[in-house]
Figure 1 (cartoon, rainbow, N blue to C red):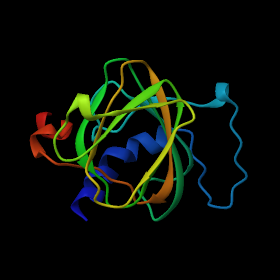
Figure 2 (cartoon, rainbow, N blue to C red; figure 1 turned 180 degrees about the vertical axis):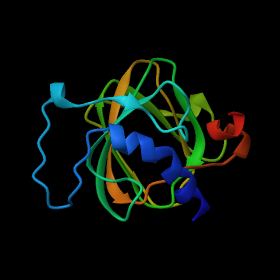
Figure 3 (tube, rainbow, N blue to C red; figure 1 turned 90 degrees about the horizontal axis):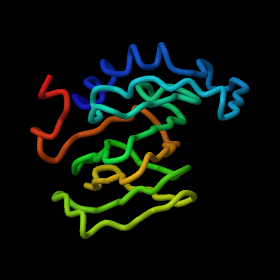
Figure 4 (cartoon, helix red, strand yellow; figure 1 turned 135 degrees about the horizontal axis):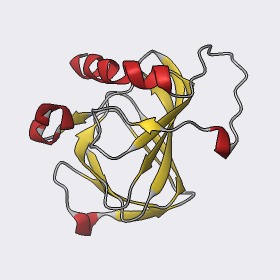
Amino acid sequence: MKIASIFAVGLIGFCGAASLALAEDAHTIFAPGDIKWVEAPKVLPAGAQAAVLFGNPTKKGLFALRLKVPSGYAIPPHTHPGYEVVTILSGTAKFGMGKTADRSATKALAAGSFFALPPGTAHFVYFDDETVLQINTNGPWGIKYVNPADDPQKSQ
């Protein structure tokens, strides 16, 4: 569970500042203007913003997390310890499968697209335009880079 604990440390401040529903049975409603974006956890490449809409990604249980990434953003090949369930809300994600990033082997997923991957499935993603995506799944959420040198936390 090293991945989860590393991610948890990165998310402690993030969850405290983000819009967060503390109780699993809380009545939660967000209009787009109500969402509070903060710097994404350091486990992701710099430049992304995030907002927790429901739950807590560092703990066991359901959560909803949005990521807003700038034009030119990329996430190198990586895996997750649990299911990755994602909907593209705006922009386009260029999604690829495998342990080696290959831009020519990606599939463009426009707003409204969805994907779900089993735990441990290696994948990568590029963004040519600002894009917002939403992860709805069970925590604890984490990320493990195929190449440890790609982990942004290693360069800090």
